[in-house]
Length: 390
Ligand code: FAD
Image (cartoon, rainbow, N blue to C red):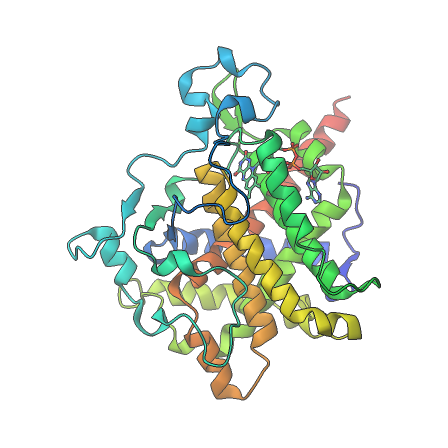
């Protein structure tokens, strides 16, 4: 990636790419450990929810006809490499959410749900995501660690349609023309998510000759590396999520991350957050200009739509990680933009009311970005080696 690492990431992120690389190196191990703990590795999702935006009953596009054309000839490949298999969830990693107390997953689901079960704040909706799945009967718990985010073969027209409808959400209703920081932030968020997914699918790509999962440099360059602004948007997202975490630090004492079950969890969280810096992202600038301040409600509703668009994704594994990450960003936005209202008690209240699944999504989204940044650095090394060998 031809970019200057000492450059600042954006007008509201007073950190350089290099500084984020350093922070990431310091926290990486703890982040990996954290998302592999029992509390953080199960996410709840309704896999059968209808797409709320368009009728897609007859467009069940997980099969090879709708797959990406990276693999030249799907027909010659064995069944277990077909996109409908790669994009499915591993057997035995989901479980119905029943009231059966003996069930190990239900036990984990209920454990420490405690105070943060309640979903909505009094005095209006402050949520940036669709919260329905987390309390809905019929949702399943999925073990994220058994279903890594990687190449699935999902692509073609269906995924293109999803991405373009996500980018269209950035056309705010207010018919104002001028540039605004809020619009810019919305675009960078979505593009950073898109780039991060592209990085993961290139980093864990199926080599159909050897059957191994490995980094594919050419694919990474074509999707992300040749577009410095896409790389930059991933770093931007890293900054935004990190600042949200930094901001909840004073209010963490009340939260029970299953500490009775795993005493280390809170230590790991404190250790990660202590290495973050408040100047990494300045949320006060986002809705500061006249145009942006008028856009705040619209921004929230539109981001919520992005989280709902995930129900239109026809590849279960992609949908799962899409939901996790959009929920993680939505939680970050809620913390960044709603935590400044009111006194200390109100702030504590907002943090107390974060649901268990918002917290799980928040830290897993940090992990996704953290892995992407690590992969970008690895791809850079592979790129330089390739140049030298020429
Ligand atoms: P796409 O990635 O579909 O992009 C469409 C167009 O958007 C491009 O032509 C380009 O003009 C523009 N674009 C691309 N990247 C950016 C960016 N970062 N910023 C701004 N504009 C951009 N596939 C997997 O293998 N594994 C997954 O886990 C996975 N998860 C997905 C989750 C979601 C929610 C969605 C919608 C798709 C997912 N996919 C996944 C599919 C993947 O994102 C691509 O859509 C697919 O690989 C086809 O890629 P493409 O080259 O056709 O372009």
